[in-house]
Length: 194
Ligand SMILES: Nc1nc2c(ncn2[C@@H]2O[C@H](COP(=O)(O)OP(=O)(O)OP(=O)(O)O)[C@@H](O)[C@H]2O)c(=O)[nH]1
Ligand SMILES: [Mg+2]
Image (cartoon, protein in one colour):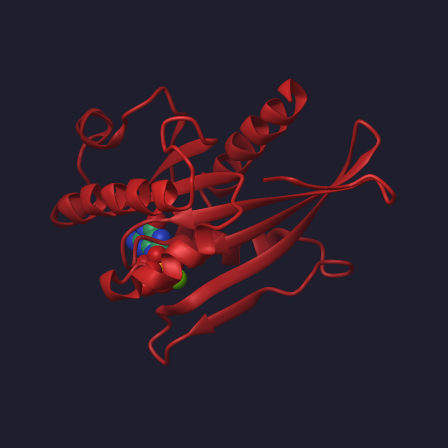
């Protein structure tokens, strides 16, 4: 649900990075944060364990400039990927306008990706959304790993609608901005329709 403020002509949309533990969600946000000009960028908020696993969420506010006379802002969130933080994941999805699914390309993690998409579908449904119609992007991360599955195999396993698929190496910043743009584009298109 995009938040409109007609008085101040501001529009805020929420994008959630979802995916299994250690797939690279926080790394995506960190790269975006690092690419922003130092003056004027907002603060990135991370609630992590001592071993850098996301405990509750990461949050990064992004100013996107003016679109059709509106000041557009994106709020980026990551969920904690570890299986037992499901209640947090469900809560973080509340009020989201788009989801970026970060898949881990490593072969031993393929099953974890499938489980995480199933978990996303359930949690979206419980929040009143449909995974088949919400703005959605599939990022195939960790393409640099020696055990990475092929693009076609991953698409066959994980792609369930006509969603954009972006190959990434988030730790090197490859594909990160492209992924965000693909999601932003869908949200803005949806807005124009409504
Ligand atoms: N080789 C490689 N390593 C990556 C890539 N992306 C992230 N990593 C590494 O993978 C590890 C986990 O990354 P995070 O971003 O913390 O993973 P996460 O999805 O936020 O994990 P949770 O918070 O536990 O859900 C870190 O050591 C990253 O540096 C990538 O594309 N290639
Ligand atoms: Mg994290």
